[in-house]
Length: 173
Image (tube, rainbow, N blue to C red; front, side):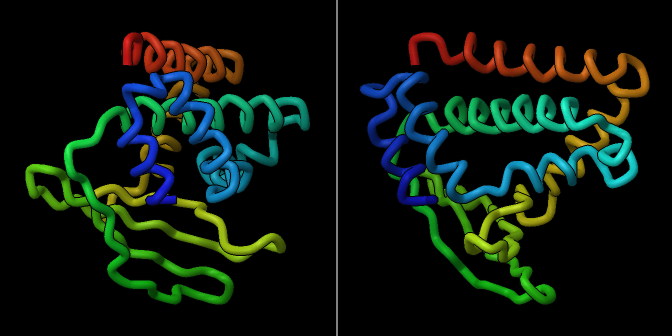
């Protein structure tokens, strides 16, 4: 995953946003378990309340947003490096992979990945920014609030707006 990210970063200008998105779509689908991540974002009881059509729509929207976010964030290279620091078994079929991203300026950013073993192998189900900030818990809090105020269609509209905003901010990149 990190090798693919570095490749995208090193070729960011040539690829542009659409090219980065195309490369990262395959990588993210191979490395992340997006349906499991979407279920975690929704929360157990809310997920059970969704119809099958809503579940598919939410998985599609959330997956699109994750890919767009990575394509937008990794838009250049200035000597960055990823290091895998440690793997820690958490429980049966679950492990934490501790990594760091060192920027060209020498700043070290901790990125930890929670992986679960599925039939097809190990897949990321959670990303912890700065080592401890759960990306999915942050989204779950945000999305729960939107669902209460605006309903399911309102949430999908918000996610689509976020993707459009990422695309617009990447224009020319």
